[in-house]
Image 1: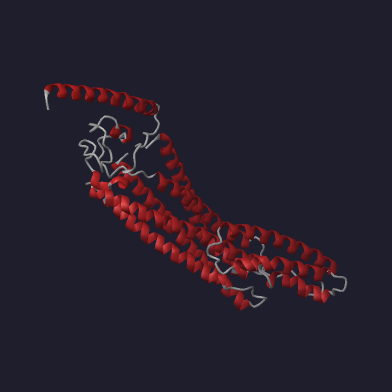
Image 2 (image 1 turned 180 degrees about the vertical axis):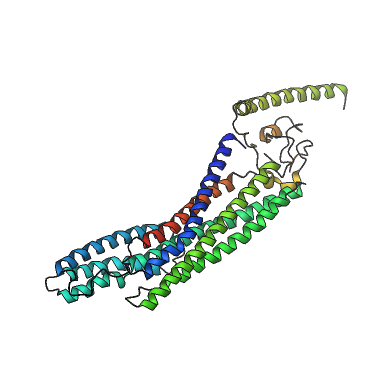
Length: 259
Length: 136
């Protein structure tokens, strides 16, 4: 192995370790993500008393909240565009595309001259509960994008597993001891299959959830689905990281046969 | 075969071998330079073993048999033909069939690494962003 290749391999290994460490940290942090759903702060921010915000305040806060959500939707659209493979039916993509115009229309209604304070409170709350850009669409889009990357990795590694299998067989036929490489190949195939299943499961879990519109039971089930899907993705990611290392093991074995 | 013909053929063979040696020396000069600088050993000029008979061609480098030999280099069977088309083995001691490179797989693994990094980013970003506005 040349010095440059060695350095690349070492750098790659370090970077992968960083990713895995981040994944582990994230897995530990997942319960904290679920907590905002049950937090007292998880409301529209509109006071239920008669001393709440004025109409002008609601209109200003509503405009800011809508602008913030439009920016987030743009971010999510870009994320999904990078890896759309799991959203074959376009369900998540359509939700992202439709929410922006719908929120703008709601903002226009909220800002209209004839808007009453009572109606403004309803419309303001709808910005959050009817769209759930952060609590529903963001996990949906991120999960779908991660699933897409996992799908692409699985496809590459599946092809590589076949190619490496043929080369290992050829090396064996020529008398080389490839037992370690064969074991790595078997583990690689199993890990890729498991990752694919978990990635698809994660997408299926989240693709069908909808904004709760103030229904606490739906809000709770959505939160549970997000946590479940995230756990599936963490498993899929770990599987593919292991499969990646398996592939490197086989490559190293082939190089050792013929450096 | 009379002795005159034999001598003539012997001289022709010697001339052909000299040309062959010069050709090989010319071909190997840049390779030697690369190796001395720590560069990668150049790939064989001919087709990979798998494309020219595969593992069955093992051992062909030391005993060329004409057609079907993947790396016939050491003893040319005719004046110039096999030499010009012959592969130059980078590591003659390695058995044929084990000369498959892994560059293609390593290029794939670089892509895999990129996608895994992106998936890891999405895994982190989703929950972090979702929690960034508790109003939902």
